[in-house]
Length: 299
Image (cartoon, rainbow, N blue to C red; front, top):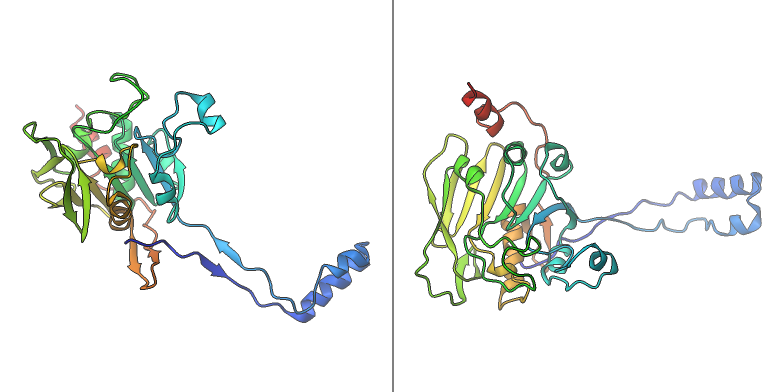
């Protein structure tokens, strides 16, 4: 969707008798005439706005803090900002996450992983369980990052150059492939009615899995997987999120991917969109979860 989630407005009607009682109570308990004057009988209650839904964010692409050299730049706000943060913030309240434990994920229904570092075994299990329990995941997994960075290759502050996510992808029946014979020029790949800017993109192969059902789109660059009660939308390119952007069409493509992957499910016809229903957060034991599989494989 190329539009923002509307703020939900909660408005309660003012009850004149109740307002009068409040004014009387203020006078009775020493509020004085000034306090009573602040209560206007019959005045409408101020509208309260409901914040956009929370979105957990983790990854080596510096969307939240910008390309900061260290904590000092983060706190001072002098780091070069990423153009994608305000785009995402139109629809979601971003909350950074640095480790994917079950406890860290419990407060979220939606998660954006932007070229994350390699995940630990515990994180793979937690992520699988979270999606399986009803979570909505948008994952950028680029086999060959092309974006510029102020930090040299090998510097941990630099975006991860190569996606290292084989365990979770394999568990969901996917293999990430890369063709080194590509020319490296920026190109457009169509998905869900929107052109996504890509460069040296990867593709997926589906090998089948008892744990997820995946379908491929955009010349096999995008995988949509149903994992238990949840869904994962996985994109084998992250040029869309280059810090030097936005590339032509990148903001619209990003918002479309957010809509497709995270459940902004209805276009209201007025340039706005509405978030989809909250994912189920109950987590019954699932024999297909990575945790159960790991236990079954243990001697």
